[in-house]
Length: 221
Ligand SMILES: Nc1nc2c(ncn2[C@@H]2O[C@H](COP(=O)(O)OP(=O)(O)O)[C@@H](O)[C@H]2O)c(=O)[nH]1
Ligand SMILES: [Mg+2]
Image (cartoon, rainbow, N blue to C red; front, side):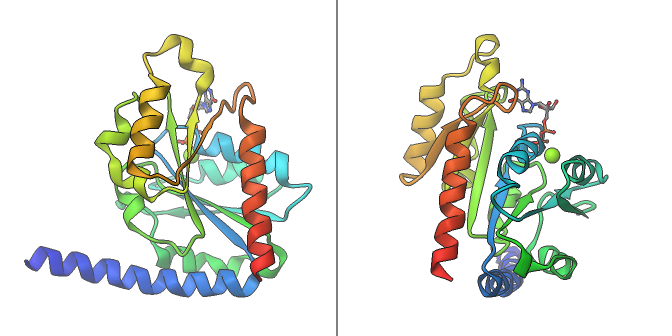
């Protein structure tokens, strides 16, 4: 019982910060996406491609979450986009207060899209609302097609699933049909994209979906 109370307290505080963030984002009309996956599924690579594809149409910035190092923020900054790194130390996820603390760094009025790369982990990030509009999950074909049923919370929480690295399908045992069926059974509304950041396959559909989400946010302003 005690453990549950402590857990509820931490999540309750996080929800309060997340609500605060949400009000900031709404007031400034910026659409915010939270990218989640296991380490190495291709989040930073997808962000690099996305930034290159959308920067001429939308004003973007990135928040990078990692346990240690500034490697990912440096990768994004090379594409001419403002990127802020959060190091979580021991924590396996970003929390809403950390996001709130970075917000003064940005001119939110000058942004259409804020992309947040969460810490690589298939469990913790889904439980911490950051105040984002949507969560997007990446699952690479190298990870195995059993991950949706083994890690259901993450797939349940996501608005979209990107099955990444489809260029590797000839070399791995990954049943796309099974993975997508299991993910959709957990989440009837889930949008699924099959993509390769290496070959570019499927990325146009992802960019179109993202552009529609940004535009949707603008019209609600
Ligand atoms: N074959 C292949 N490799 C990829 C693809 N996307 C990313 N990678 C590689 O996967 C590794 C991890 O990618 P990264 O973007 O750092 O993953 P993150 O940890 O989720 O941010 C890197 O070596 C990337 O070059 C892809 O579409 N196809
Ligand atoms: Mg990364």
